[in-house]
Length: 195
Image 1: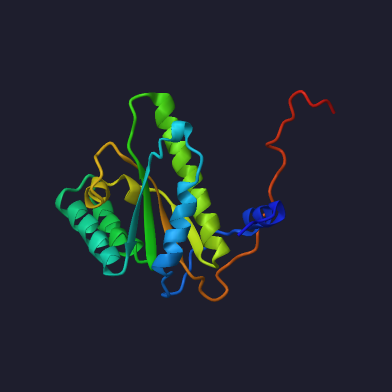
Image 2: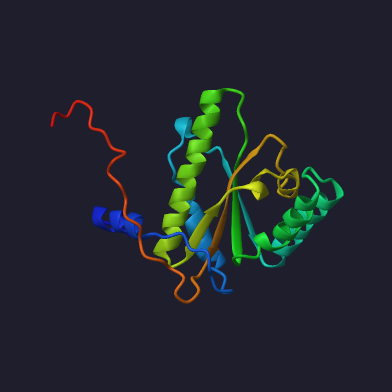
């Protein structure tokens, strides 16, 4: 299928992050197509530094329970926040029928490490646009769940590996897709272009 530049730009402009999704799960075929789009992201020296961990069904609950139990048994947090973090871990992965954890291994060379992180972010952008083209909505989340040692352990990642994000995928709940926000041009400067 060949897309016109207008179709690509329209997909970029219309894609929305959506929190509320139905329980209907995308098919494995659709997910494979979406992940293939992620693999086409630019990456320096064609290193393909990313890993994708597709979590669905009851595995979401098992993973959340593992993380919560680990937090409770080995609290890295202070006092009452442990209970709140554990409760959040138990429900976070249940926000959508499919969650894709995107990770990269860290590199000692700071330039390569930054390039690998940037490549993974590009892969996520491709993934979310491909999902949108199939009427599958997404929400890219970061935060504590990405940094917990238990999350990395569950996904068989090393302690130094970076989870770039948890991508929540599903079909939108009724009235869940909001209006687009206006973008500011104030962040653009033209250097060497005259007036």
